[in-house]
Amino acid sequence: MHWAGRKRPRAGYGWSVVFLVGHLLGTAIIFISLFTMGWFVSVALHALHRYHPFPDEMFRFVTRLELYLIYVDSALSGAILLMGMVRFCRQMMEVER
Image 1 (cartoon, one colour):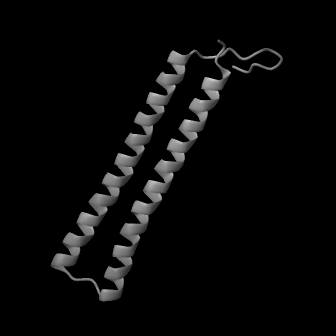
Image 2 (tube, rainbow, N blue to C red; image 1 turned 120 degrees about the vertical axis):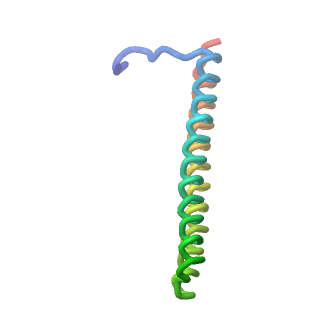
C-alpha cells in the first residue's frame, strides 16, 4: 500500500526485532543453499577427476572457480546482512517513543 500524503505507520520494537530475525534466517538460508550447491559441484568435479583426470590447466581452473564461488557467496551474504542491519537501524530510529 502506498502512503502518499499520509504518515507511514511506524513499527514497534517488537516488529523491528521480528523483521531482523526473519532477515537473518533468510540470509542464513541463502548462504547455506549457495554454499551447499557449490560443495556438491566441488564433490562431483573431484569425483570425476578421480575417475577421468582433467588436464592440469583445467583442474586448476576448476579449483580456482570453486574458490571464487565461495568468495561470491560470502560477499553476497555479507551484503544482505549489511542491508538488513541498516534496515533494522532505520526502523529503530523511526519508532515513536
